[in-house]
Image 1: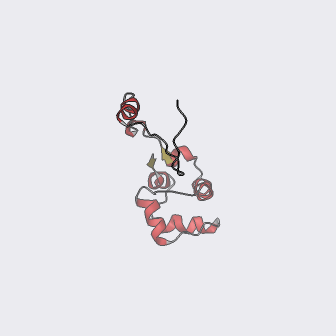
Image 2: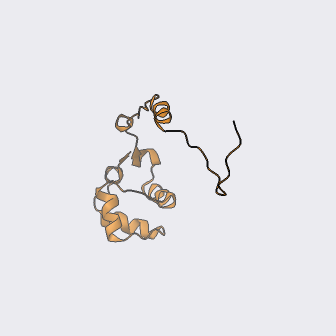
Image 3: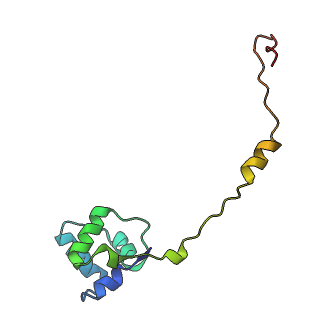
Length: 107
């Protein structure tokens, strides 16, 4: 996913992170300068849904403007279907032994 906060803010005439930070605080979302810097300039590792809701309300936009899918970056993992069978045939069979020294019944 591409984080698009800076462009969404610019479309609304907000050019500084500090201006958006102040607007968010007016709506009850107090963000530290460090976290605001990460939201403004980078790709945040995570964001709370409640925070995202406030950001969307302040900017008057939808989530689809802030988070843009990038399906071309998703890789499909191919599993080798023969691997489990090969692993089970290579391992020797486990024979249980009794702790009291007696032999097991015949099979």
